[in-house]
Image 1 (cartoon, one colour):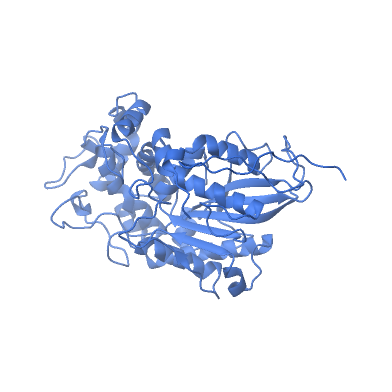
Image 2: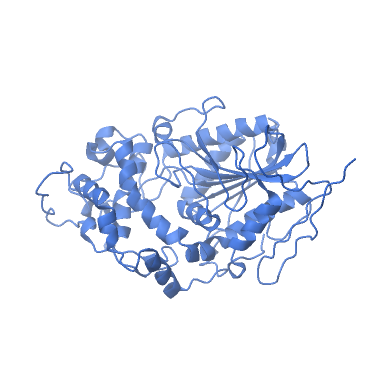
Amino acid sequence: MKKTPRLMKPFSLSVVGLTLALALPTGLAVAQSGPQPTDDTQLKQVIIFGRHGVRTPNLPYNSTGSGLYLDALSALPFPAFSVSGVVTLTPNGARNETLLGGYFRLWLTKEGLLTGKDSADASFVYLRAIDTPLIVGTAQAFAAGFLPAATININSIAPPAIDALFDPVDAGVAHLDYRMAVAAVNGRLGDTPQSMAFAYAPELALTRSVLFNYPVGQTPIPPIPAGKLDVTSIPMEVTTGNSTLPVGLGGLVEIAAAIDPFVMEYADGLPLSQVGWGQLTAGSISQIYRLYDRLLDLEFRTPYLAGVQSSNLASHIVRTMVQAATGNSMTGALGNPSTKMVVLVGTNTNIVGLAGLLHLDWQLPGYQPDVAAPSGALVFELRQSMRTGEYLVRASYVSQTMDQLRNQTGLTLAAPPAIAPVFIPGCSTRNATFDCTLADFVTVSKRAIDPASADKVN
């Protein structure tokens, strides 16, 4: 039998961070370039990194004595959801999350990771979520569709402790230099942040018309109603921020807060007359959301910020796949060597930051590029070629479309959510699924990860 080359060194772990030098099990072939004629791979592990489900707005409707509130930003009162409170998972949001969990159940059963015996399968699942009612509730709803006959333990870090996997800055694992953050974002804007007002003029005009209830394009535009704040007129500037939003972006922050409810109104199934007060469709919501997406892009995809805020998460994901491939316990890995399914539930900022760190992009129907949609997930598959034995990483982005969310559409293998294969720069090959050898994925991740911003704590 022909021998296949082996990579030379085992993983070595530095004291301050992550030094990645991979040794894979015996009998693995050298990476093959070019397209593969057939998919001869077997799924060995999957990491599903998802956002919370559809929720109520981030801001209260009425004044609480300090800070912004929604009804100060619009001519008409914002419509109420079926559940009260801010940042609360809605019943429809939970149902859609359960539908998505059911889809992953079907897919992973087809792939052979799930057996259909839920109690037995649960021992191979590692589920972790940020410990807030919104996100733990999302994890519970996903689990109800994923393994309906089993109880899955949800790993979380209870407040006041902070989970460094999702928030390494506040947890003290990563140090954010706010002056560097301001410089890095200003550099991307040519030191003229107000130029965004020109670049996004159509979106700003649409936002103002919806908030103040007049047809877009009306001239002259009506004055600001008495006692209201026009968020589109607040200057855009880059200032020192905080650990939640590392830089201040002036009016762009208030704009994002004002338009945040629109996608949730549509996705939660509110009557169309209440979605942007009857002025918005799925398409125009997507256009307005270019403003929100720009805020996330600057705050979390800017290279310096992605390195500080997302290196710890990337380090744990890489270690988890290496642990599964080698069968050896590894510090910083999630679960144990026999864990087949890792489900992480966080926020859109977590997903955007990880995507920025690894330069991942996707496009799904009805969404702007790289949108971390409600319930949407980055999926990393660890696969093994049955022909060569080599381990491969396959990435994709999976999300229900806006209409699937709105209509609570059942999901099956024949009628799945929207799925986009994700190319991993410096790693993926040219086949249809953009496969990347695990060894190359480790190398690419090592280049991207800031070891000073990552820990090795499980």
